[in-house]
Length: 154
Image (cartoon, rainbow, N blue to C red; front, top):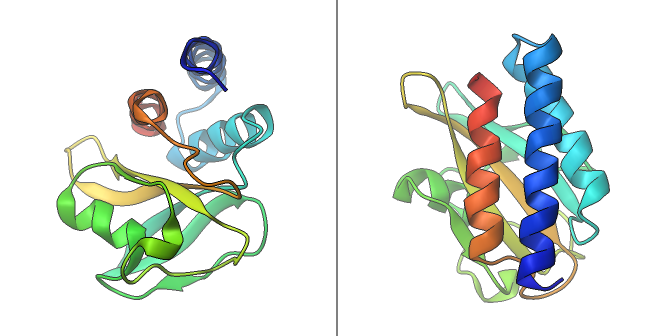
């Protein structure tokens, strides 16, 4: 998808998600589930779309759409922990070249992980999106997914 088309689609999806959340939700879990359903079904290159949440020092699967997920992600391993430890979004064009990548599904080839922060600015988890194609994610995905993730605790 070219950058202009991707940007326009994200803009529409952001507005749709924001309106859905503002109209009817004050619950972060409901917000996560809503945004995942919209993103997973409207972005054709999203193969697996979900949240991993920090629970007592463990990174455990939360709401998601797609194939069966790993329940626990080993501490300080993989792309999700990299995003938490760096405190920033991580884009991986080819997961097979990422040291310590956790292969929950061998069909995954590229990935983007966005830190999820609560109202106090503390990282409480991540949005993890996988694609079955290489090089699926770029700065447009990063910018919009960061903005969308902020709606979880809106």
